[in-house]
Length: 269
Ligand SMILES: C[S@@+](CC[C@H](N)C(=O)[O-])C[C@H]1O[C@@H](n2cnc3c(N)ncnc32)[C@H](O)[C@@H]1O
Image 1 (spheres, protein in one colour):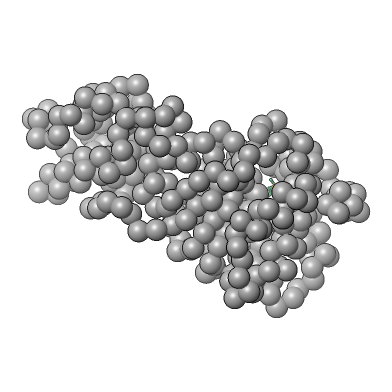
Image 2 (cartoon, rainbow, N blue to C red; image 1 turned 135 degrees about the vertical axis):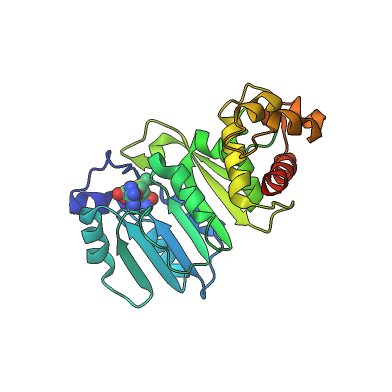
């Protein structure tokens, strides 16, 4: 029982994003959603007291767990020892180079959700099943023309198919966080559309969502320096005018790509 582990080691949590999932049915459902096969290597970020870790170890060929807090690393070592199928990394997830993994399953530290998600997109993996703050999860899976559609949604659409699979109440955790949570499934796949320069595309999307109420035309003109196009005032007439009249929240990911590709090609001339 998760409560007993917390009690045994005198762990309270509540700071450093430490909210432990105590609802055993939800823990099981998260692991089921990952459909773990015996040959797979699973990455877990923020292993905490090992409540999810032990379930992952029961199914996977190998588990790599990352945990920053030395007190929790002590708990993990004490509980699991050093079996061959377990690698424990005591470090900050944002500093650690991830060893190769097939799937990532984690109840994430919410305050660095964005950084972790963008970091994961740089790796090759089959599936992610991740717990996020509910509002973050909504933005991650949002489609164009919805209020939650953001640079995060466009990036996620570029790298993967995403869906929200469970909404989790506060009471599933100890101590309960102030916010609702949700589990999201992320399935990486090749992009549905061509992007000539990934970094340029991502910077462009970030820049225009910085002014989400503005029409694309105004945002692009404003960001001419960042976009590297000095003669933007003239060049903008060559871009598809119907896209420039929209706001970023109304553009499909492939429409962002179309604009970014045209600007990138012009900049490189
Ligand atoms: C929401 S808790 C999840 C704990 C446990 N896996 C569970 O499901 O109950 C997040 C965990 O991430 C750890 N953590 C927070 N920031 C971290 C970081 N930058 N790098 C690695 N671990 C971190 C916390 O110590 C905590 O154990």
